[in-house]
Structure formats: structure tokens, C-alpha cells
Length: 431
Ligand code: ACO
Image 1 (tube, helix red, strand yellow):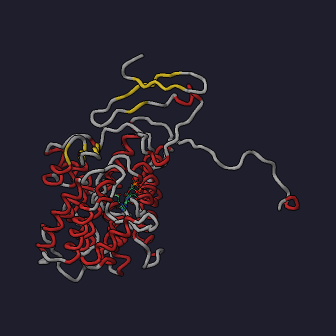
Image 2: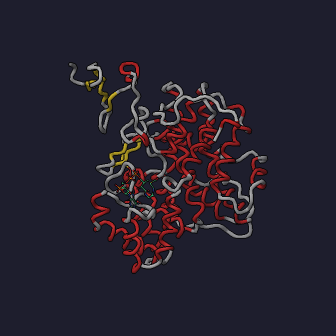
Image 3: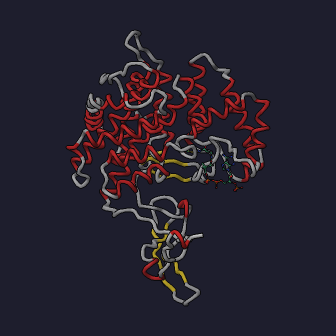
């Protein structure tokens, strides 16, 4: 029996088969089960992918038990402290930090794809003014494929490259326009003299009638939010992008599918829910009541911003954003902000509570990001949009990797538990 194998025995027949165990650079090894069905005539069942790796990837590594997050091997703490968002984009896409020339060239290319085809702006008028901006994002990003026909051949590396730049460069412009439309302000065109994050904030908040300025502390916090959200290995939206892309659908369609998956409150929508929850709790005195509700198995209420499928330790991104939230509030002269105090008290009580301790439920990235964004002046319904803007590079990097590895179409199997074969009944034969 080879050492690096797992032997599985079918007790019905006595057949034993060895399956190879493959090790990665970091993290637990995997058992490769592609031939499982061929050998045993059985599928494996793992709803929610709790024990199943869907692909090999070189992009992002998470150790959920230790609370570690690495992009291409670099710790998230170091990138959040020292890197620009454009540099992180380059790293995620190409695997290495850029030298100065590579960086300048990359920034130049990203900057010069920021404008939208003017006709795309007509799309916005088709939406109701009160449309959720994520609904607009799903539609407009998918619609890019109708405008950029020259870069849709997923087998052509040059097309993939151009599409990647288009998606990463235009997503802030699309997102800012969705906000401007909802508040009835004119669209703001990108300013190519500004950095990626600064330009995004400028398109969100500037108006033609006033001079626009923003504090570097707020830009830094937003840069950190964007870096921390840029990728997170095979989460629901990234897996959706990879699966949609595996059918060789164009990258704009795949990215639009990812935005749809991100929208849900169990994923990217949680930061919106965190703020609603904090408003609902209202004061430190009511924290106990809500902790009690979160623990009650009969109550569907969950403490939003707590828990994570992978992190069973403090989410490293939450730690960085807790500090950033404090810095932003001090900068804005709101060091005693009641919402921040309430959040810290909620965290303190939850972390002492046996339920949360034994289930390893720690604050996740969404817990503090909503407080920062709200202090910067971003409305709650834009939080998930900001997440989508930041995550676009992760989706694109993972999509490119999947195509470059030549993975075939993703097609899970199932355990069918529906009706067995039966014959059609004519209407007069039915009960
Ligand atoms: N509040 C109360 N109880 C919780 C919470 C919570 N936030 N999260 C998990 N639990 C409980 C579950 O009820 C479960 O209890 P049980 O063992 O008695 O059945 C136990 O903890 C284990 O949780 P799971 O449901 O197995 O965790 P799972 O991996 O399925 O879910 C999830 C993770 C969806 C993130 C969950 O923790 C949750 O709903 N959190 C709140 C929403 C949230 O903050 N989402 C953001 C995730 S981060 C991101 O997407 C960027």
C-alpha cells in the first residue's frame, strides 16, 4: 500500500481501492476522488462543500483555525498596511508583486479603461430610482458583453487580458453611477489623475457645484476595505464565477453571476445586515436580549457579522478594520460614536459567552466594515456594492486561472430523492 494514499473499502463487495493524497503548499492535503465513481459506482455527497475542494488554486490561502489569510503567499496584514489596491490587483492577477515599471504600466492600463461606453449610461434610466444598486450592478456588468464584442473569446489570452482590465477598471464607474442614479445626482466621469480608490470615492461623492476634497484617513480606510475584500479563495461568489465561466461563458456574464451570488445576506449582504442589526439593538443595554435571541435555536435571528464557514478564529480582516473604524471615527471627530461603542460591547459580550466561544463564532470582516463605510457617508444599500467592486479582481484572477488550467465544465452530481419512474396519468385518471 503506497504511503500517500487513502484506501477505501466498500463493505458491500469487499472491493478496496487506493486513492492518491495530494499535498498543497499550505493547508490540509486532499484525497483525489475523480475516479471514485468509475471504481465504485458511487458518488460522494457533500452539500455545501464542507469537505470538498472544488479546484486547485495558487491565488489565496486561508487557515481558518489560525485566522490566517495570504494573497499569493503575502499576509493580508502586510498588504493592508503597505500596499496600494492597484498593487494588490497586480499581485492577485499575475502572482508576484510588480517592479516599478510593471506597476506604472499596470496603473496606466487600469486608469485608461475607466470610462463606460456612453450608451451604457442609458441602461440606468431603465431602472426605478429606488432599485437596489446590486440589481443595477448585476444588469450593467452582464450588459458589458453587449458592448465589448472584441474581447469575448475566452480561449484567446489577449481577449482575456483586455476583458480583465475592462472589468477591474470599469466596476468603480458602474458602481458609482448606480449610486448617483439612486440619489438623483448627475453621473460623475472618472478622473484619471486620481488613484483607484480615490477616484471611486470622487465618483461617488463629488457634485458639479462644489469643490471635492476627502481626508487621506478616509481614503486609507477605504483602501484597506478594498484590499481585504479583494479575494477569499473559493467562497460562494467566486465559485459561482468559476462555475459560470467553466461553461466558456464570457467573463462579463460570469462576473454578473458572481455579483448575484454575493448579494445574499449569508455572504456579501451581511455588512448591510450588520448595520441594520446595530440600529435595531440601539443601545448597549439591549445587547443581552439580542445575544439571547441569537442563541435560541427556535429563533431565526443570528448575530450578523459573526461566524464564518472557514474562520473558526478571529477573522484577520476584522482585526484590521476594527482599528481602521476607530481611526476614521476619530478623524471625523466622532471618537465616542455610539454605534462603534455598541459594536465593541456586542463583540466583548459575545466573546465571553459560552455559546459563541464553543461554536467558535468570532466577528467577521463585515462586522466593522459597515461602521467605517457609514461614517464615510456611504449609504447602507451600497455596502455590498463596495464589496463587489473590491472582489472583482479576485473573481477575474480566479476566472483566468480556471481557464488557464484548462479545467472542463463544472458539473456536480446529486443524490436523487424524488419520485421513482412512473407513467403519465391523463387528467381523468388523477385524484
Ligand atoms: N449567530 C448565532 N449563531 C450562529 C451564527 C451567528 N451569527 N453563526 C453560526 N451560528 C451557529 C449555527 O446556528 C450553528 O449552530 P448549531 O451547531 O447549533 O446548528 C453553529 O453556529 C455553526 O454554524 P454553521 O451554520 O454551521 O456555520 P456555517 O458555516 O454554515 O455558516 C455563516 C457561516 C453563514 C457565515 C453564519 O455564521 C452566519 O449566518 N453568520 C451571520 C451572517 C454573516 O455575518 N455573514 C458574513 C460571512 S463573511 C462574508 O461573507 C464576507
